[in-house]
Image (cartoon, rainbow, N blue to C red; front, side, top):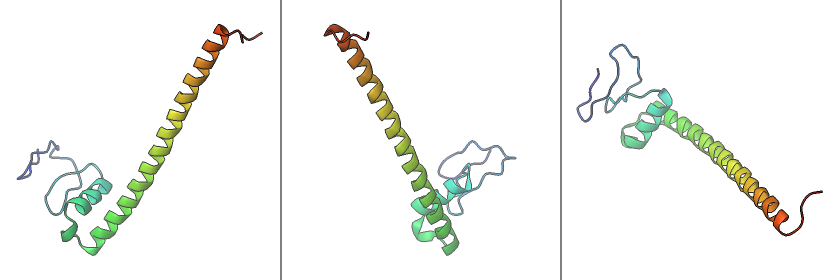
Length: 99
């Protein structure tokens, strides 16, 4: 298992995990490593690392935007299901039952 001076990480010795060039922390993907380096070590980045960070941040922003649209769509569907259920339940009580 690999360890860091600040924190221990459970990474198998035979794993090929990308690691931070500055603190040695392992990450599951290159994208997450690039985000970590840009957010945690912004003053220590090379031009290449800064480009990778900016590309990863743009991709992350796009993914978050898509997630927000999906979450909003799900909430709208749930809202209308409850609204229609309530409308059908109360329609029978006030005499607007379906034929």
